[in-house]
Image (cartoon, rainbow, N blue to C red):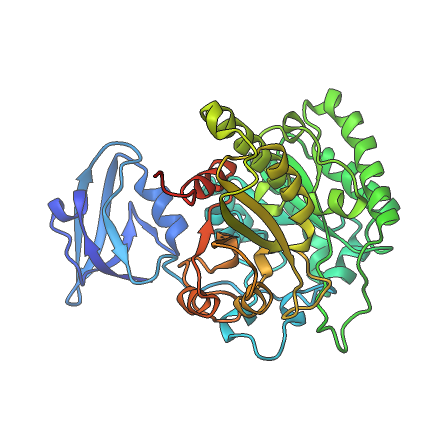
Length: 438
């Protein structure tokens, strides 16, 4: 296997490796993908085998440990994406409306993106040989969708007999000193209750390799025709999940030195309970799974607010009208936060949006589309609209329905400002939109 080089810089360029060459091996090791490349390049002494015009050349390079070699390839991963082989009961891709763009229908399940970007994978498409490569390449930490440790139940949830191999895979990762965070997407009456008790107990036994377990309520759209019958959590059921989690958190903290079990913010919002304190989220290891995101936002906002001049910390009753458009779930929390931290010259109101693209059962901000935003915010009396940057794809220019950011601005006829997810970024966005000093 050889990989065509599109750019050569640094150590590689100085050694004479050129764009257009093909990378064959490093120190005698065939390169399967970017994970192999990164791990092998960390060494000080490299024998880099290159193919140029059909002939092989070996370049001997010495560099600082972990210093980059300096090669770039046409594909960042240096290989194709590994796709999902599951048929999960709650697969979000299966619930998409018919008219979404094709890229949203790609079902990936690639442990390499788990390492590089923190995405969750099931390991059902990972062989024992690949587990050993994960160990050999020190690919840690990983983020693993467990859902249930009971083998029969996990097979049912994921829709494949390969799901039963998880316990052995996790034990092999622990033996190889690979850390991993886990998640369980919970479905009412399926993998909560006693099944969740077993999942927590089994995963806690894998600590310290198992670092944490996030509990996330199943996400359901209104496009589930012909799919497994699932329903959202009720308030009472969400409370039951939190009660079970709290029992285990109290038990595991003295035993493991961590609360280990971390329900997502959505469970607390569904239950109508206060978001836990900052210290209870420990190192915020599961924040990308919606665990502690609101608490960290509040902490960062409050800390930044405390540094403002006293003259700005006032409720003036007038000034620039700013609207924050978001999903229904976090709206109450955000309004309470803003009301507790008034800013002179700013009248900030939160507008919870109904998700008509995916369905009213979807209440998170990140899944609000441009069409829903424009339809519901057009005509709102405000000078500017703030939205979370999570509504936009990674390039920051399109919503999930393919509406461009500039199109939404034009249709709304006023500034539409994406804001980062940090609390201090939200405060900065408000301050930057205060009236100009006379």
